[in-house]
Amino acid sequence: MAGKPRVPWDLSEIIPLSIPKGVKKLCELCEKPAHLQCTKCRLTFYCGTEHQQADWVGIHDRICQLLVPIRSPAPFYSLQADRDTHRIQTRIKQEQLVEISRAVAQSKLFEGKYMEVQPAAQFFLRCATDIFGPGVVQLVPAYLLLAESSVGLGSLSQAKRFMSAAEWVVLRSPDCGPAVRHQLHRSLGRLYTMMGNLDAALLHFANDVYYASEEYGLDNTVTCDGYFLMANVFIQKGERLIAHSLYSEVARTWHSHLTKLFESLKQNSTSLEPSFDKSQRAEVDQMLRTILEAGENNSIQNKSQIALVAHCLAMLWFLGGDPQKALEFGSRALQASQLIPHHDLTEPIQSLLQLVQTGLRPDTDTS
Ligand SMILES: [Zn+2]
Ligand SMILES: [Zn+2]
Image 1: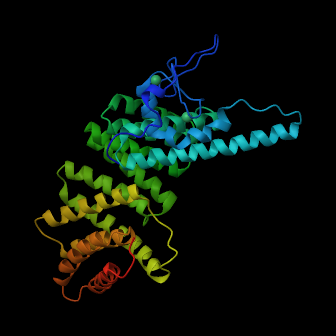
Image 2: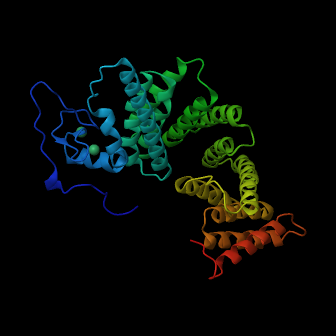
C-alpha cells in the first residue's frame, strides 16, 4: 500500500511517559530507555516517535489489543486451579501472537517491504523466546526473517549476524528437521548471492533443495523454488544452458501443481481454499515471468516451454481472480502452442480461455 503509514494518533496526542522511580521502561524496538507509550494498549513503550511509528506500521497495529491480557499484571487468584487456567490461556495467546507476527513478517518479506519486516520479526523472536526459551530451533525462522530483510535493506553485516545465530542453533540441535535446514540453506544461499559469492550460494541452494525434497518431495513447488534460485545464480555465472534446464524443471513442476488447483476449482467451483495469499502469488508471478522472458529471449526459442509457462501464468491469475491477466497470458500461451502441430496443451489452454471469457461477461459477477 502506498502513502503514509497509518498511525492511530496525532503526534500531539502522544503521552510523554512519566517513569515511576525504579521502574525502567524500554523501547519496544531498540531497548533504549523509553519516553513514550502506546496510547491504545498503554503497555508498550518507545524511545521516540520514529520507533513508535515503525513498530505500528510493522506489527503493533495488528497486535496492540492482543497484548493487553499478556502484558497486564496477572490477576490475583486464590485457587491453584484458577492460576493454572490463567497460565494455560496466556500461553495459548502467546502462541497466537507468535503465529501472527511470523505470518506478518513473512508476508512483508514476500512484498519486499524489508523495513517493515523487522519489527514483526523482532517481536516474533522475543515472543518465541519467552515461550520456548533461548537457543532453540523454534527461533530459527525468526532469525532468518531478520537476516533476509537485512539482506533486502543492503545491511549485509547485520544479515550475517542473524544468519550466524541461526546456523549456531541448527548446529547444536542434531534433531533439527529438514524443513528448518532447508530454510537455513535457502537464506544462506540468498545472502551469498547478494554478496557475490556465487559458488557458496550454489552450494547452499543445493543443500536447500536436498533438505526441501526430504521434507516435501522432489516434485514439490517448495523444492523447485530452490532450483529457480540456483538457475538465477547460473545465469549470473554465464552458464545459461544449465540455467535453462533448471528453469524447465521449475516450469514443469509449477504447471502440474497449478493444473491440479485449476481442475479442482473447475470441479467444485464454490469451495476452493485460497492456495496462496496475494504476496505469495506476486512472488510466483515474478518467478514465472522471469522464466518466460528467459525463454523468449533465448536464441533458440522453445515454443513448447513458452506455451507451458504462459499457461502457468494464465492459471495463476485465473485462480487469483484476475481475468484480464489470465486472458493476456492465456492468449500468449495459445499463440505459442498453435505453432506446434498437435500440441497437447492447445486444448487445455483453449478451455481455460473459454472459462475466462465466460467470467468476463458483464452479467456475471466477477468481484
Ligand atoms: Zn527505540
Ligand atoms: Zn499498543
